[in-house]
View 1 (cartoon, rainbow, N blue to C red):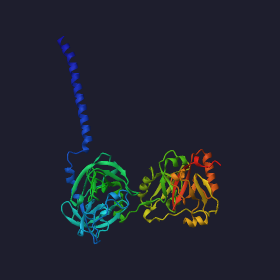
View 2 (cartoon, rainbow, N blue to C red):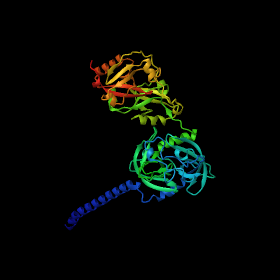
View 3 (tube, rainbow, N blue to C red):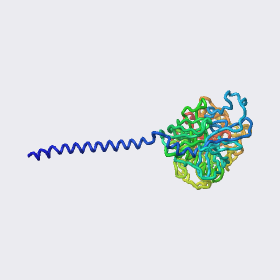
View 4 (cartoon, helix red, strand yellow):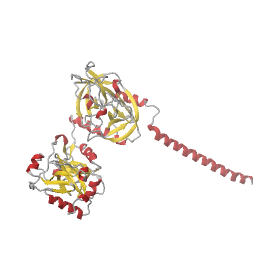
Length: 495
């Protein structure tokens, strides 16, 4: 009897012990999971700094240009933030009062191969007669420029050493998340090797160029950090420190590093050719706005709207103005910026598939890319038929329009190939004015069809209304540059 009682009382105790064991195990697993998730925040950055410091270098230049001791700004020329990055020539702002210095520590860089290739910013070494690279261990070597790319502000140097040099590798910048830890190294304010840490504040920042893809960080970056590396916690370079946003010239926690995935593509080309060789599609494009999407019957604003197709790869393949490029080489196109980057990062001579939306249907074209650097920079207008000279004017959609006459062609310096309707007057309270149309603009197409007379335009308006459209898409040219504008048909005359 006692044995039975003991057995019955031991079962609950055993169950209780199993419960606590299971609970302890679950807590232990949870703690290990949280610890693994927190490993991105190390107790100290010292081990990482010690490991990668030998690969980071100071850049010193020597120049014979009077009064110039270094770059004049901390960002590439033309940046919208340029006004914040003034390079002071003297402490008092007078310029020229301080003694000239033949050489000065200008920036930073890092070694990417044991045979002596060094990456820095273009603005760090631009215009220099001599370039010297100082290593963390104290050695110093002369450097030669292999190639530069002002578009991304990247330069590749080469030094000759007696033996293999310590170097760092590039990481995947696309794998970085907002909030990830990063560490910057360089030569801030000429103070020598320095380390700062922070997080990724934002990704995909654009400052001035078509190929910009900056990582924003709050790691302290100052003058002299330019060209230095931004590391992830694995010791891989995921960005090249290039610019800061600061009204004072010092760090306020808003720094920018060109992403490694852009840099590696540039470096590979500079290393192989000594110059960049970017792909060229041969189209002028603009973003698809909400009103343009409605006017074209598109389901979304994704893609890049082709506004002009000069002689080149796209023209030869059959792409036309008014097409919306939705995929390029198998990658979705979200906007014009994404397309420019995709094309620029594609090898010259590669044949790619370009999918476009044309009048509500998708079509695929095979395009063999040219080289952007070889392309003619001047806008080339499409071939057109002679324009009938009609002296009459008419008011449509809040604009006074006239066919192109000899007088207007001469007055507006329009090429012989330019056709369409000239805006000779515009109501400043009309939607057309709000959308940016001005006197002298040429309306080349309406509803994705050429217009050469007032009757052509009126016909396009009627067709759009009959199709249930609330707006009409116009192709407008100004100084040879085309863009699409969608105007509401409610403003059109009902006559």
